[in-house]
Amino acid sequence: MLPNWYFEIFNRYKEQLQRKNALYLALSAGVDSNTLLHWLSIFKDELPPIYTIHVNHNWHGDYSHLWANFAKKRAEYYGFTHFHYEVYFKDHDPKGLEAAGREARYLKFGETMQENSLLCVGHHRSDQAETLMQRLLRSSGVRGLGAMRDFNKVEFGPHTIELFRPFLSISKKSLYETATKLSLPWLEDYTNHEADDMERNIIRNNLFKTMEDEFPKYEAAFYQVTQFMQEADDLLQDIAAEDLTKIGAQNPFSPKNSTLLINLPALQKLSYLRQKNALQAWIRPHNLIFTQKQLSEFFRVFVEQVPTHQSFFKLENFGIFYFQDHLYLRPLVEDSITPTLQFTKATNAPSQAFWDQKNLALIKREGGERFHPINRDKSQLLRKLLQEQNLPQWERDNCWLLIDLDTKEILWINHLGFSKLLMPYIKEEGVTPSLALFITDVPAI
Image (cartoon, rainbow, N blue to C red; front, side, top):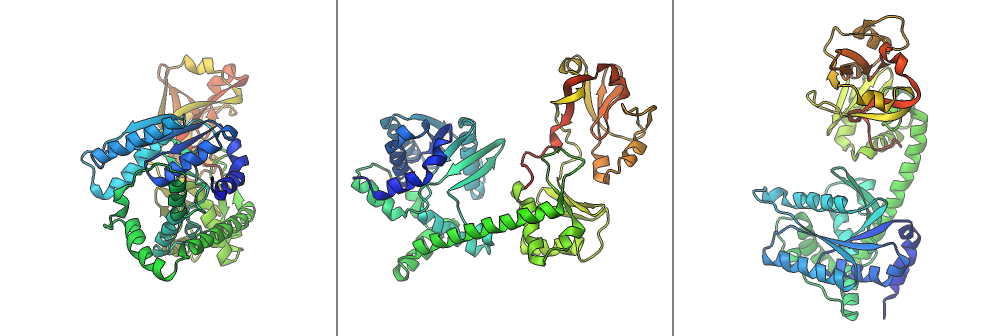
């Protein structure tokens, strides 16, 4: 007989799953993913098409192949299409092997999955407790203490993968009991029991073994804490969204989906706690977070003293800049990198055929150039044209010219648009150049 929680979990997520085109299961040989495999098979007639994926890291010799073959046979047993990949890590630093393995694994997942699909993973309540303990030991805030969510997105390379964790409320003990009762086969991964220098294994095999003797219900308590923290984080996000509508502005120098600007005087009118909350929400779409130390430094640079156009704050591979009462969040790009030229549909622009017949090159502004914009009567020095646009200095520095290599004429500039030379070729519907480097894939909050 199937356990009641099989049906409870299915009914909890049924509608969300049915809106997807496909479900993919990250399948290993362990009890968690094989119980999840069985759970999916029970409800497969009410779900989108189901596929399984196994990535063999080849870390454990014959064991790796044993686990890989086992996963393949279990997927075939249920009639699911199975994807198997082999990856190798020769000459890789052992200290970074776990992260390298995760990246390789998720890149394969992303390459395999189709649009509007979910990656189902077997994380359970015991994993959630370990994650919460890790975050506590790292002094995480509300967002971090929410630990893993049942649905969330991760980005690896060009792939954005939506994860689904249906078993977060189920303990590993319950999974073992269910698999045993239903005679589900699995293989133990002996590496999970090695209390070496891996942080999670120390928590699992040392701290929690001691805790279980005195606090046998600690897992359920930890799980409840993560739910409270997720609710608190959602509430803080709602408050931040309201505040960002008041203090945010669209970036006039970048595409519509770029990060909002922050009006600094408006930010300063908020309470200190709401300022911090709004700033965290502002950078969150880029997977960034301020530490307490970084926030203190940010306030010193932009709030406690009068900022200038030279004020700058580095946050990982992004920079925060100040210009005319506004804060800009921009990716930091090496000067040697040339953006990718692409064409997008636009009104009052030349046709795609016009651009296709040109021998085009994208070059960076060097100084001394002249340009004749389509809306001007004469050409002028590019420097003066950019000054008239009231551009921040970093935007003037990131000025790119699209030239015709055959005639050496400038046809388009990213901050100024088309040359007067293109007037005879303008159509009601056409395409316009754009630079991929300056497009942020994550929409503003």
